[in-house]
Image (cartoon, rainbow, N blue to C red; front, top):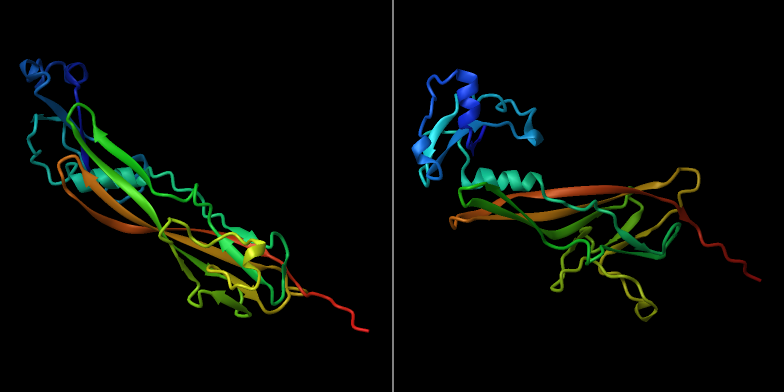
Length: 237
């Protein structure tokens, strides 16, 4: 389990009655810190969560702890990853509500909501930090039935140059195929609604205050919408 630094002179003196930490490195206040094992509450069920059992130890400022499980720039970036406020993948659709057989359904994401987001994790008093950034990459649509046509045919809607995924329908676009969407080919009468699943992939990158950086595994977050499809009725005379 990663270690993080803390000033704990009084705590150590009270727990150990001054042994062996009585006034330990007191003259170095501001020039370093005690480090101790702390469980990440987001990963408390990890098998290694309780494997850090060293008593608190001193680390001089700007030194690298001689501890294989100590916090590294990448580990700190992973802490930030756990705190990314990724919005739920709730798509917008047109038509809204019930869909109609052979009528295109336009699908898109709110560009103002689904945009790059960042979180910085740091160790207080050290100047050591790492910033993790998530950027929407692509939306994948699964119509919940084989009786559907997808746009694009792969069902994966890429992010546009302006940061948008898909586009809202407007009257000016009548007759156009949606850049992101689908067309249901059969009604759901007698079968119950289709479970339309939308999964958004986020590209995750990080950079530390020391200049290191790189990629973390892509994040995928999905949401399911129940869709009822009706047939359009017409009377011929």
